[in-house]
Amino acid sequence: MIWKGFRFGLFLQIAVGPVCIFIFQTAATSGFFIAEIGVLGVTIVDIFYILAAIFGIGTLLNKYKKLKSIIHYFGAAVLIIFGISNIIGFFYSSPIVSMDQSAGNTLWKALLLTLSNPLTILFWAGVFSTKIGEENIKQKDLYSFGFGAVLSAFIFLTIISMLGTYLTILLEPKMIMGLNLLVGIVLLLFGVKNLVKHRRNNVNPGQQV
Image 1 (tube, rainbow, N blue to C red):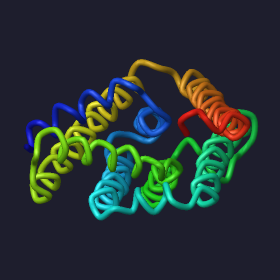
Image 2: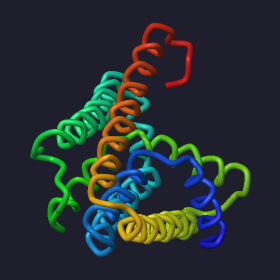
Image 3: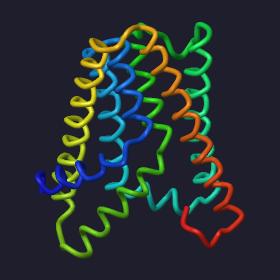
């Protein structure tokens, strides 16, 4: 089951999201080891989400629609704030984004960015429900499957850290600053997209949130 979870996790990495972009940016601006602190933070939250899904918290989120809506807005707000901060940091000194990030700052940023999408719990709850229904696996096997998925994410983001570090060697400081601006724009677009999508779903409640 660990191998099945690992393969499934690798498939999920195809859809590059804001966390992956953040790790790449961190590696390019602050080096591999600082970026790996961020990867550790992402891994911690992923483990929490998977355990929450196994314990049935996804059912609770589905039951309370208002809580689900608040979570959507929270996630969009985090992405928008990080995006705007990166853009401002391109022109001025920013309290959230800097060229030289400390390990502690990188850790809490990674934690916050990953926590910005707590409805991931619902996704994993659906995956595990399908596994139990179609493959008739036991709950203990869900832990192995989840571990494999987390392991694949950790390895993938570590590779992204390596690529970002190598990019530092190739690019001049001004180009790296331009990367910060690009990342800010992308994060802002991610946040706005999530916000618009949620508002549209509220107008058309028949759509899947």
